[in-house]
Length: 637
Image (cartoon, rainbow, N blue to C red; front, side, top):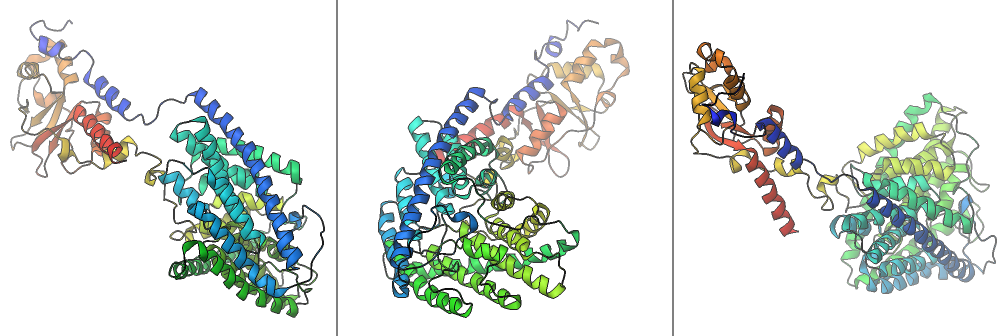
């Protein structure tokens, strides 16, 4: 039946159906990102490849510089023989000078002072580098000054080459990130691409120095957040990681960092032990964070310039570490000058915890030595990094975790007497659990430990221990610049639903506008007549005898009634209505938008607690409120 010609207002009020308009406008509004541009993806991957190759070359130079300085100062001048992991020997044997404990005692101070002077050119290079990198990602658009590449590399080489108790990997986070930012600036890409290339640089630097391509890529995307990952950066990070790894092993060869047992059989009965290890590691991690925080506070109060504080920390390190090193070395029959992991990254000590050593005593004496080394390493790393020394916190974290795990494994073996317990397995699990917990990177650290050992035998125990430590250390972090999720990062503008969730219906509803309403007994001819007289309503309230909403008639139903003229004498508003669709003034616009979309209407009545209509919320007002809110945020930024 054709629409009635007498009712043009009903049949031709809006050409598109209201439901189509509501769905169209709000659905368009809720599209938070444009479709993927494959040309953009391809360009980003090409740029990530450039970052990977370049960061690999920088990592080779950086690593070689540390080795040269280490051999000159520590081995040549001080006669200090560093204890190394199995995969750290790249240059073969070299000549040793006479052991000079007095010189070894002051070398970290001289290196720290030189590093501090150098970082006057770029103060953001002080400390481990991880926090500065994360801060740049979230708050500076991924921009890192170009000078950071060489300032951080030289400052870290001076710190580590003179015995600073930190690692190489932390600085490579910042160096790689700075190189990625440099490439982005040279190619003049967008802020979003710059951040992606920055993360690709982080992955590339870590992958090269650690020789863990997959773990480095995962860690680079995890370390920015406490409870989230930067998923968009994963593929560029993987590509850059693979290429930097390839560059590095082309120069230094392919080898895992740690030697280990041929196999670590999975024993389900040992899972409770790994769970207990995770709790023990979490407690030790809390001690590490507290000591580090105490040193930072104390250092900040020193009456010396910022650049001189790493020298003070180096002096304190020498005065504390060298006598303890000599005491432990003599007690455990280690040759004079033989380092036992106190200075430097400490991977040699972690290697001893994994595989043992000819000089490591048996039984409870081994436990005593490993615990002592872990405690000294906590203090030594805090004195270096906490005073602003340019050295990483990654290596000390792994070393401390390995020592704690190795001690725990030996305690378990001695107490239980189960020959299937391998302390080396507990040392490796302790390594991943410690750093994964304090840095909130459970997946990245899990994979990295498996790659470091060249074995995935410990995957299940690592998963269990990482999960427990992640929960236990929820409110603590090695990196204060981390934010909880992408929604908390300025790098990610809030999505539409986030913006709407911050606004209330009362802020944008239309109040005081005359509107059409029906009683339950209103006949259909009257419904059609009144509906045709309004030019803005899509939803017509139907009120009961007390003036409260009993239901609504939508304009779609009005159209249908207009075509079925035979039903007019027999139908009332009560017969044509559907259940009431309303929102409250204190509802947020996110909830109201979901109501509009679910019902397919352009506006919805707003009712008070008594159920009486106080206004209408229109889709156009929702869109206007969103645009106004985002404009304010852009101006504020």
